Length: 287
Length: 298
Image (cartoon, rainbow over all chains, first blue to last red; front, side):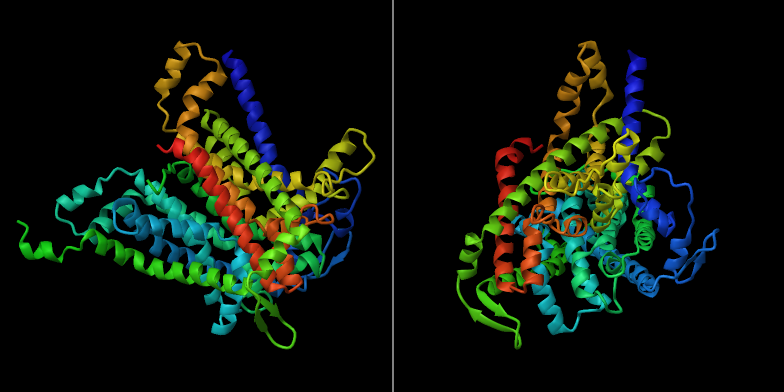
């Protein structure tokens, strides 16, 4: 009986791993193929020849395969490199601002009762529900007036509109689950700000870390706003810089290599912080 | 020890709350009220782009026009079907993943780290990947079919399967997050309860239903809401996977709004339609809360 259970468990694990990895593998193998092999029919599971040419092309150098075929450098490489740098800059700054704003906010909402609390909470929730596609035009109109289109500053602000509501909502639920030990600090004579900074923040650092990870991943992966507000300018972000591979310059191997690079930062962050995510226990923020 | 003056300098709850929340209230005004108001204003105007931007007030005409447009009703049905399929798949998958990962096995940390990966991938990236998998020429399923001696292409970006492919890809991306939050619930269930269930000789299914499931209900409710909202407002994934095609078969409300506003440049009509979408999003969450959420509050 016990042995059977173990067998089923390992079977389920194998299925789970195959389900997780297959879509990634199926696409990323393109990055390692020669152009002739990409459209080979029927598609193969394990290509017999692989190389790193596409990555080298992507960073602006030619590559010669073993058979002596020249793979020319990608014309988009400067855009892609600039996109990587901009995305990194925007995501890190947006995450830092998000954390500075929401940690005190979520603390206030989870611990204190005051007028208009529910109304404020619901308005935060409403901003989670707003589809970006319908606020895009107003933002675009406003940005043209303020001269913020094509700037990283404008992009950071628009990114905050995505990260702040979602993460606040989540963090309130997490904070409510932490027993109010910091009240003891108040009894010991700490002021409100001291209690918050010296007792509460260290107490809840795992949840705060997860919130930071989520807002970093959200900012890094933001596509809809960036494609309208900064595409084609100096503030181009990584997702929009590779979107030109999609429609204008169809080089599947370059697109695949670029996508792989773009997956790395969120992947690394999620990989090392996953155990904190599985410690997140949330409750109803409205309660 | 506490002098009276010190007590007076202490902030009251309300003041402290205001001090903390004020920046965010301004921010919300800026990012919620302004765009919403602007969109509302635009939805009541006829916007013409040629010969300079011109607005002409036409009242509720845009809203009537949207209701009379059969594309709107088609797109609403597509959105609802896609959302239902995504939500059911995401929650079931999340539950499945959480239960497996809560067991004891070797290399636990490594396997957990691998399973979270799909969630960290952007939705536009997912769209590109799943398009490659579904396409007949390059698809994964074509490869499987050929492995078993088939000759044809298996094209999933077709009239009959594209929505299911979209829902599957969406669930692939969202389920790990659901699973990890459920996992944290499962880890708070005392082991004792399982021992007691063993004494009662409960079957595995009964154990799941009576011991594991009850503490998960609230998280499942929250993530059902999140998945519904996310799927209804999803744009980039559909944009890179199927572009609403083939034909208009996978053209959701978001994609229809995108086409109206940015391809046909009918900004007024697009804004009007986006208010119907907002209504659908808020309405379905409220309904879910009314029917289900009130009962599972801890």
